[in-house]
Amino acid sequence: MKTNINTELFTKDMNDIAQDFSSGNVFLDNFLKSEDALNNSIGKTFVWLNENRTEIIGYYNIGVGYIDMYYGDDKYKIGGSIHLNFFALNEKYRGIIVRKKADGTVIKFSDRLFTDFMNKVYELREKYIGFSFVTLAATDEGYSLYKRNYFDDLDADLHFSFKDDEKGCKPMYLALDAE
Image (cartoon, rainbow, N blue to C red; front, side, top):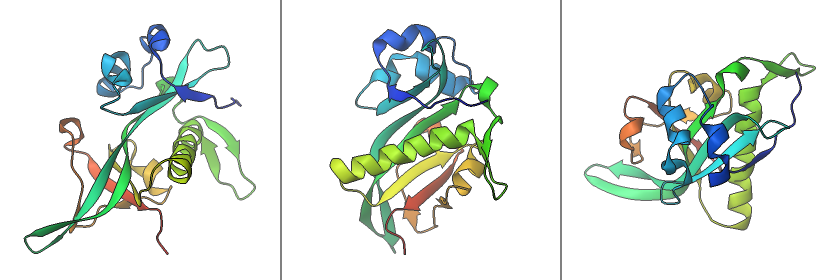
C-alpha cells in the first residue's frame, strides 16, 4: 500500500473527519477531537490526510520547551527545544509496511509521519526559531519508533517540564547538534 504523505495544519473545517479518528488511545483521540487541537497556546497540530481528504491517517502536535541541567541544587537552562506534544496514527494504518529498503529496513506509516514531523522541526529551525533539542514523552507503544530515530532517554541530570498527561511516559530527547 503506497500513500502520498500530505500533512497540513489542522483547521476547524477538519473537525468532522477528526471525529472518526481512532488511534486505539482514547486520550490521543480525544485531543484531536477537542478544541485543544486548535489552541495555539498548546501547540500546532498537523494532520496527514488521505488523498480524498476524507480521513486523517495520523497527526502530531508540536510546541516549544527547553531542557534544564541540574548541578547540585542549581538548575541551568541548557537549550531550547521543540516538544512533540502528541503523535498518533490511525489504528488501521498501524504496523503496515509502506516500503522495504534494499538493506531490508521496513518503512511503516508511523515512520513516514515521524519523518514529516522531523522535516517540520528542521524547517522551523532553519527559517524561524533557534533551538538545540527535540523533546517528547514516549508511551510504551511509541518508544521503539523514537529509539530507532535516534532519540535517547533523558539523562538523570537533565529535565524538561511535563504536562499532566505525560506523567507515566518516558522522557526522551534528540540533541540536534550532537557530534
